Length: 388
Ligand code: PHB
Image 1 (cartoon, helix red, strand yellow):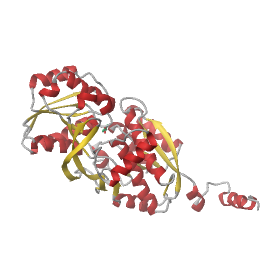
Image 2 (cartoon, protein in one colour):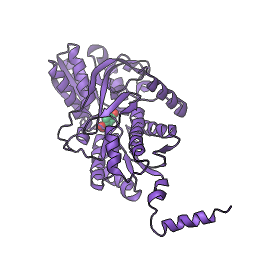
Image 3 (tube, rainbow, N blue to C red):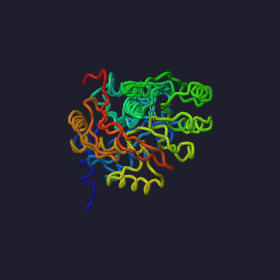
Image 4 (cartoon, helix red, strand yellow):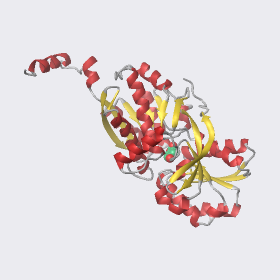
Protein backbone atom coordinates (compact mmCIF):
# COMPACT_ATOMS: atom_id res chain seq x y z
CA UNK A 1 0.00 0.00 0.00
CA UNK A 2 1.18 3.46 -0.85
CA UNK A 3 1.56 6.19 1.80
CA UNK A 4 0.53 8.83 -0.69
CA UNK A 5 -3.16 9.22 0.28
CA UNK A 6 -2.33 9.57 3.97
CA UNK A 7 0.31 12.17 3.25
CA UNK A 8 -1.95 14.26 1.05
CA UNK A 9 -4.68 14.14 3.71
CA UNK A 10 -2.13 15.43 6.20
CA UNK A 11 -1.08 18.19 3.80
CA UNK A 12 -4.71 19.19 3.35
CA UNK A 13 -5.35 19.27 7.08
CA UNK A 14 -2.38 21.60 7.59
CA UNK A 15 -2.98 23.62 4.46
CA UNK A 16 -0.73 26.64 4.18
CA UNK A 17 -1.38 27.39 7.85
CA UNK A 18 0.33 25.97 10.89
CA UNK A 19 -0.92 22.52 11.82
CA UNK A 20 -3.36 22.55 14.69
CA UNK A 21 -5.34 20.18 16.93
CA UNK A 22 -4.32 16.55 16.73
CA UNK A 23 -1.48 17.24 14.32
CA UNK A 24 0.09 19.92 16.52
CA UNK A 25 -0.08 17.45 19.39
CA UNK A 26 2.20 15.13 17.49
CA UNK A 27 4.80 17.86 17.19
CA UNK A 28 7.55 17.79 19.80
CA UNK A 29 7.38 19.85 22.97
CA UNK A 30 9.97 22.61 22.58
CA UNK A 31 12.07 22.95 25.71
CA UNK A 32 14.35 25.97 25.97
CA UNK A 33 17.32 25.28 28.22
CA UNK A 34 18.90 28.55 29.34
CA UNK A 35 21.83 27.54 31.52
CA UNK A 36 25.48 28.50 32.04
CA UNK A 37 27.87 26.51 29.81
CA UNK A 38 30.84 28.74 30.63
CA UNK A 39 32.16 30.52 33.73
CA UNK A 40 32.14 29.65 37.42
CA UNK A 41 28.70 27.91 37.21
CA UNK A 42 29.38 25.85 34.04
CA UNK A 43 29.41 22.49 35.85
CA UNK A 44 26.11 23.36 37.53
CA UNK A 45 24.41 23.99 34.19
CA UNK A 46 25.78 20.73 32.84
CA UNK A 47 24.41 18.74 35.79
CA UNK A 48 20.96 20.36 35.50
CA UNK A 49 20.76 19.49 31.80
CA UNK A 50 21.87 15.92 32.45
CA UNK A 51 19.30 15.50 35.22
CA UNK A 52 16.48 16.90 33.07
CA UNK A 53 17.38 14.67 30.14
CA UNK A 54 17.68 11.61 32.36
CA UNK A 55 14.04 11.87 33.41
CA UNK A 56 12.95 12.39 29.80
CA UNK A 57 14.98 9.32 28.74
CA UNK A 58 13.33 7.30 31.49
CA UNK A 59 9.94 8.22 29.96
CA UNK A 60 11.06 6.83 26.59
CA UNK A 61 12.13 10.26 25.33
CA UNK A 62 8.59 11.66 25.69
CA UNK A 63 6.68 13.84 28.15
CA UNK A 64 2.88 13.70 28.13
CA UNK A 65 3.15 11.41 25.11
CA UNK A 66 5.14 13.92 23.04
CA UNK A 67 8.73 13.91 21.87
CA UNK A 68 10.97 16.55 23.40
CA UNK A 69 13.05 18.93 21.30
CA UNK A 70 15.76 20.98 23.01
CA UNK A 71 16.89 24.51 22.25
CA UNK A 72 19.94 25.77 24.14
CA UNK A 73 21.46 29.10 25.10
CA UNK A 74 24.61 29.62 27.20
CA UNK A 75 23.62 32.45 29.57
CA UNK A 76 27.22 32.85 30.87
CA UNK A 77 25.70 33.76 34.28
CA UNK A 78 25.65 37.31 32.93
CA UNK A 79 22.57 39.34 33.92
CA UNK A 80 23.45 42.05 31.36
CA UNK A 81 22.92 39.54 28.52
CA UNK A 82 19.92 37.80 30.06
CA UNK A 83 17.08 39.58 28.27
CA UNK A 84 18.67 39.13 24.82
CA UNK A 85 19.44 35.52 25.60
CA UNK A 86 15.98 34.58 26.82
CA UNK A 87 14.39 36.29 23.81
CA UNK A 88 16.36 33.97 21.54
CA UNK A 89 14.36 31.15 23.08
CA UNK A 90 11.01 32.93 23.39
CA UNK A 91 10.89 34.88 20.13
CA UNK A 92 13.28 33.15 17.74
CA UNK A 93 12.81 29.51 18.75
CA UNK A 94 9.27 29.93 20.11
CA UNK A 95 9.79 27.38 22.85
CA UNK A 96 6.84 25.98 24.82
CA UNK A 97 8.68 26.05 28.13
CA UNK A 98 11.76 27.76 29.52
CA UNK A 99 14.02 25.82 31.87
CA UNK A 100 16.56 28.03 33.59
CA UNK A 101 18.72 29.11 35.18
CA UNK A 102 21.46 28.93 37.83
CA UNK A 103 22.24 32.61 38.58
CA UNK A 104 19.60 34.60 40.49
CA UNK A 105 20.15 37.86 38.59
CA UNK A 106 19.83 36.12 35.22
CA UNK A 107 16.74 34.22 36.39
CA UNK A 108 15.01 37.44 37.47
CA UNK A 109 15.43 38.88 33.97
CA UNK A 110 14.24 35.61 32.43
CA UNK A 111 11.17 35.62 34.64
CA UNK A 112 10.31 39.16 33.58
CA UNK A 113 10.36 38.06 29.92
CA UNK A 114 8.41 34.88 30.77
CA UNK A 115 5.73 36.90 32.56
CA UNK A 116 5.41 39.43 29.75
CA UNK A 117 5.09 36.72 27.08
CA UNK A 118 3.19 34.29 29.34
CA UNK A 119 5.75 31.57 28.64
CA UNK A 120 5.76 28.64 31.04
CA UNK A 121 9.01 28.69 33.07
CA UNK A 122 10.60 26.23 35.48
CA UNK A 123 13.58 27.43 37.52
CA UNK A 124 15.91 24.45 38.16
CA UNK A 125 18.28 26.30 40.51
CA UNK A 126 18.32 30.08 40.95
CA UNK A 127 17.15 30.86 44.45
CA UNK A 128 16.16 34.55 44.07
CA UNK A 129 13.48 34.93 46.72
CA UNK A 130 11.42 37.23 44.48
CA UNK A 131 10.88 34.50 41.84
CA UNK A 132 8.37 32.90 44.21
CA UNK A 133 7.85 36.07 46.25
CA UNK A 134 7.25 39.62 45.06
CA UNK A 135 7.71 38.66 41.37
CA UNK A 136 5.70 35.42 41.49
CA UNK A 137 3.38 34.51 38.62
CA UNK A 138 1.04 31.62 37.78
CA UNK A 139 3.38 30.47 34.97
CA UNK A 140 6.61 30.51 37.02
CA UNK A 141 7.59 27.38 38.95
CA UNK A 142 10.71 26.37 40.83
CA UNK A 143 12.08 22.83 41.29
CA UNK A 144 14.96 23.89 43.54
CA UNK A 145 14.80 26.21 46.61
CA UNK A 146 14.64 29.85 47.61
CA UNK A 147 17.88 31.44 48.80
CA UNK A 148 16.22 31.97 52.16
CA UNK A 149 15.63 28.23 52.75
CA UNK A 150 19.13 26.69 53.19
CA UNK A 151 20.39 29.96 54.73
CA UNK A 152 17.68 29.96 57.40
CA UNK A 153 18.33 26.29 58.20
CA UNK A 154 22.07 26.95 58.60
CA UNK A 155 21.23 29.70 61.10
CA UNK A 156 19.04 27.31 63.08
CA UNK A 157 21.84 24.71 63.14
CA UNK A 158 24.54 27.22 64.15
CA UNK A 159 22.40 28.62 66.98
CA UNK A 160 21.55 25.08 68.10
CA UNK A 161 25.27 24.36 68.48
CA UNK A 162 25.48 27.21 70.96
CA UNK A 163 27.46 29.60 68.76
CA UNK A 164 26.78 33.23 69.68
CA UNK A 165 28.94 35.39 67.37
CA UNK A 166 28.89 34.80 63.63
CA UNK A 167 30.41 36.36 60.53
CA UNK A 168 29.21 35.77 57.00
CA UNK A 169 31.07 35.80 53.71
CA UNK A 170 29.57 35.68 50.22
CA UNK A 171 29.32 37.18 46.76
CA UNK A 172 27.50 40.50 46.76
CA UNK A 173 24.47 39.65 44.61
CA UNK A 174 20.92 38.44 45.19
CA UNK A 175 21.77 34.82 46.05
CA UNK A 176 24.54 35.66 48.51
CA UNK A 177 22.71 38.51 50.18
CA UNK A 178 19.47 36.55 50.54
CA UNK A 179 21.26 33.47 51.87
CA UNK A 180 22.89 35.68 54.53
CA UNK A 181 19.51 37.21 55.38
CA UNK A 182 18.05 33.74 55.85
CA UNK A 183 21.01 32.71 58.02
CA UNK A 184 20.67 35.84 60.14
CA UNK A 185 16.97 35.19 60.68
CA UNK A 186 17.54 31.60 61.84
CA UNK A 187 20.63 32.42 63.90
CA UNK A 188 19.28 35.48 65.68
CA UNK A 189 15.97 33.74 66.45
CA UNK A 190 18.11 31.14 68.27
CA UNK A 191 19.94 33.80 70.31
CA UNK A 192 23.01 34.44 68.13
CA UNK A 193 24.24 37.66 66.57
CA UNK A 194 25.78 38.22 63.14
CA UNK A 195 28.63 40.62 63.93
CA UNK A 196 29.78 41.38 60.43
CA UNK A 197 28.81 40.60 56.83
CA UNK A 198 31.72 40.30 54.41
CA UNK A 199 31.33 40.18 50.65
CA UNK A 200 33.09 40.49 47.32
CA UNK A 201 31.73 41.01 43.80
CA UNK A 202 30.46 37.99 41.82
CA UNK A 203 32.30 35.90 40.57
CA UNK A 204 35.47 37.14 42.30
CA UNK A 205 37.77 34.80 44.22
CA UNK A 206 40.12 37.27 45.91
CA UNK A 207 39.30 36.05 49.42
CA UNK A 208 42.57 36.89 51.18
CA UNK A 209 41.73 40.26 52.77
CA UNK A 210 38.38 38.94 53.98
CA UNK A 211 39.95 35.82 55.49
CA UNK A 212 42.44 38.02 57.32
CA UNK A 213 39.52 39.91 58.81
CA UNK A 214 37.86 36.69 59.98
CA UNK A 215 41.12 35.61 61.61
CA UNK A 216 41.36 38.96 63.40
CA UNK A 217 37.76 38.95 64.67
CA UNK A 218 37.66 35.24 65.65
CA UNK A 219 33.88 34.70 65.56
CA UNK A 220 32.41 31.45 66.93
CA UNK A 221 31.25 30.41 63.47
CA UNK A 222 31.35 31.52 59.82
CA UNK A 223 28.44 31.19 57.40
CA UNK A 224 29.27 31.25 53.68
CA UNK A 225 27.48 31.08 50.37
CA UNK A 226 29.52 30.32 47.24
CA UNK A 227 29.01 27.77 44.49
CA UNK A 228 30.78 26.09 41.60
CA UNK A 229 34.35 27.11 40.80
CA UNK A 230 34.27 29.95 43.34
CA UNK A 231 33.26 27.57 46.13
CA UNK A 232 36.19 25.27 45.32
CA UNK A 233 38.64 28.13 45.76
CA UNK A 234 36.95 29.47 48.91
CA UNK A 235 37.15 26.16 50.77
CA UNK A 236 40.79 25.65 49.79
CA UNK A 237 41.75 29.20 50.75
CA UNK A 238 39.90 28.97 54.08
CA UNK A 239 41.93 25.87 54.91
CA UNK A 240 45.22 27.28 53.62
CA UNK A 241 44.73 30.40 55.78
CA UNK A 242 44.66 28.12 58.84
CA UNK A 243 41.04 29.01 59.57
CA UNK A 244 39.53 25.54 59.19
CA UNK A 245 40.78 24.49 62.62
CA UNK A 246 40.31 27.90 64.24
CA UNK A 247 36.79 28.98 63.21
CA UNK A 248 34.17 26.34 62.26
CA UNK A 249 32.10 26.74 59.11
CA UNK A 250 28.35 26.13 58.94
CA UNK A 251 27.59 26.90 55.31
CA UNK A 252 24.96 26.85 52.61
CA UNK A 253 25.21 23.36 51.07
CA UNK A 254 26.18 24.72 47.65
CA UNK A 255 29.65 25.46 49.04
CA UNK A 256 30.35 21.72 49.08
CA UNK A 257 28.03 20.35 46.38
CA UNK A 258 29.46 19.19 43.06
CA UNK A 259 32.83 20.45 44.29
CA UNK A 260 34.23 17.78 46.59
CA UNK A 261 36.66 16.07 44.23
CA UNK A 262 38.32 19.42 43.59
CA UNK A 263 38.21 20.54 47.25
CA UNK A 264 39.74 17.28 48.57
CA UNK A 265 41.06 17.33 52.13
CA UNK A 266 40.14 20.99 52.65
CA UNK A 267 36.41 20.15 52.65
CA UNK A 268 36.45 17.18 55.01
CA UNK A 269 34.13 17.58 57.98
CA UNK A 270 32.43 20.80 56.78
CA UNK A 271 28.84 21.10 57.99
CA UNK A 272 26.20 22.48 55.66
CA UNK A 273 22.46 22.63 55.11
CA UNK A 274 20.66 21.76 51.87
CA UNK A 275 17.59 20.01 50.46
CA UNK A 276 19.65 17.03 49.28
CA UNK A 277 22.34 14.73 50.63
CA UNK A 278 24.28 12.20 48.56
CA UNK A 279 23.73 9.20 50.80
CA UNK A 280 19.96 9.42 51.39
CA UNK A 281 19.31 5.70 51.60
CA UNK A 282 15.91 5.51 49.95
CA UNK A 283 14.91 3.33 46.99
CA UNK A 284 14.14 6.51 45.02
CA UNK A 285 17.55 8.13 45.60
CA UNK A 286 19.44 4.89 45.09
CA UNK A 287 17.69 4.22 41.78
CA UNK A 288 18.30 7.80 40.63
CA UNK A 289 21.99 7.71 41.50
CA UNK A 290 22.46 4.38 39.76
CA UNK A 291 20.69 5.52 36.59
CA UNK A 292 22.63 8.80 36.51
CA UNK A 293 25.97 7.01 36.99
CA UNK A 294 25.16 4.54 34.21
CA UNK A 295 24.10 7.29 31.77
CA UNK A 296 26.85 9.80 32.47
CA UNK A 297 29.72 7.89 34.15
CA UNK A 298 29.70 10.38 37.01
CA UNK A 299 27.88 10.89 40.28
CA UNK A 300 24.92 13.27 40.49
CA UNK A 301 24.76 16.29 42.81
CA UNK A 302 22.00 18.61 43.98
CA UNK A 303 21.92 20.38 40.60
CA UNK A 304 21.28 17.10 38.78
CA UNK A 305 18.41 16.42 41.19
CA UNK A 306 16.89 19.85 40.54
CA UNK A 307 17.10 19.31 36.75
CA UNK A 308 15.55 15.86 37.07
CA UNK A 309 12.72 17.28 39.16
CA UNK A 310 12.11 20.14 36.71
CA UNK A 311 11.38 17.45 34.12
CA UNK A 312 9.18 15.58 36.60
CA UNK A 313 7.18 18.77 37.25
CA UNK A 314 6.71 19.39 33.54
CA UNK A 315 5.69 15.76 33.06
CA UNK A 316 3.06 16.11 35.80
CA UNK A 317 1.55 19.07 33.95
CA UNK A 318 1.74 17.52 30.48
CA UNK A 319 0.31 14.20 31.59
CA UNK A 320 -2.72 15.98 33.06
CA UNK A 321 -3.54 17.55 29.67
CA UNK A 322 -2.40 14.53 27.60
CA UNK A 323 0.38 16.53 26.00
CA UNK A 324 -1.80 19.44 24.89
CA UNK A 325 0.39 22.25 26.17
CA UNK A 326 -2.09 24.82 24.87
CA UNK A 327 -4.32 23.93 27.84
CA UNK A 328 -2.13 26.13 29.98
CA UNK A 329 -4.43 26.74 32.92
CA UNK A 330 -5.14 23.05 33.44
CA UNK A 331 -1.47 22.22 32.96
CA UNK A 332 -0.33 24.85 35.48
CA UNK A 333 -2.99 23.78 37.97
CA UNK A 334 -1.74 20.18 37.73
CA UNK A 335 1.86 21.28 38.20
CA UNK A 336 0.92 23.43 41.20
CA UNK A 337 -0.69 20.55 43.05
CA UNK A 338 1.70 17.78 42.02
CA UNK A 339 3.59 15.80 44.64
CA UNK A 340 7.03 15.25 43.17
CA UNK A 341 8.72 11.95 43.97
CA UNK A 342 12.19 13.45 44.10
CA UNK A 343 15.50 11.75 44.95
CA UNK A 344 15.65 14.32 47.80
CA UNK A 345 12.34 12.96 49.21
CA UNK A 346 8.78 13.75 48.16
CA UNK A 347 7.90 17.45 47.97
CA UNK A 348 4.90 19.57 47.13
CA UNK A 349 4.83 23.20 46.05
CA UNK A 350 3.87 26.18 48.18
CA UNK A 351 1.05 28.40 46.90
CA UNK A 352 3.85 30.57 45.45
CA UNK A 353 5.18 27.50 43.50
CA UNK A 354 8.38 26.90 45.49
CA UNK A 355 9.23 23.44 46.97
CA UNK A 356 8.18 22.83 50.57
CA UNK A 357 10.98 20.51 51.63
CA UNK A 358 13.14 19.06 54.36
CA UNK A 359 16.49 20.79 54.71
CA UNK A 360 19.16 18.29 55.70
CA UNK A 361 22.19 18.84 57.89
CA UNK A 362 25.14 17.34 56.01
CA UNK A 363 28.79 16.62 56.75
CA UNK A 364 31.49 16.15 54.13
CA UNK A 365 32.99 12.68 54.16
CA UNK A 366 35.26 11.76 51.24
CA UNK A 367 33.47 12.85 48.08
CA UNK A 368 30.00 12.84 49.64
CA UNK A 369 27.81 15.21 51.61
CA UNK A 370 26.42 12.72 54.12
CA UNK A 371 23.20 13.43 55.95
CA UNK A 372 23.35 13.97 59.70
CA UNK A 373 19.58 14.30 60.00
CA UNK A 374 16.98 16.88 59.11
CA UNK A 375 17.87 20.45 60.16
CA UNK A 376 14.39 21.85 59.50
CA UNK A 377 11.45 19.69 58.47
CA UNK A 378 9.09 20.66 55.60
CA UNK A 379 10.49 24.18 55.37
CA UNK A 380 8.35 26.55 53.28
CA UNK A 381 9.72 29.83 52.00
CA UNK A 382 7.55 32.63 53.41
CA UNK A 383 6.83 33.80 49.82
CA UNK A 384 6.90 37.40 50.97
CA UNK A 385 5.17 39.85 48.64
CA UNK A 386 3.57 37.20 46.39
CA UNK A 387 -0.01 37.84 45.34
CA UNK A 388 -1.36 35.02 43.20
C1 PHB B 1 21.85 31.71 42.59
O1 PHB B 1 22.41 32.63 41.96
O2 PHB B 1 20.67 31.79 42.93
C2 PHB B 1 22.61 30.48 42.93
C3 PHB B 1 23.73 30.12 42.19
C4 PHB B 1 24.40 28.95 42.50
C5 PHB B 1 23.93 28.13 43.52
C6 PHB B 1 22.81 28.49 44.25
C7 PHB B 1 22.14 29.67 43.96
O3 PHB B 1 24.54 26.99 43.80
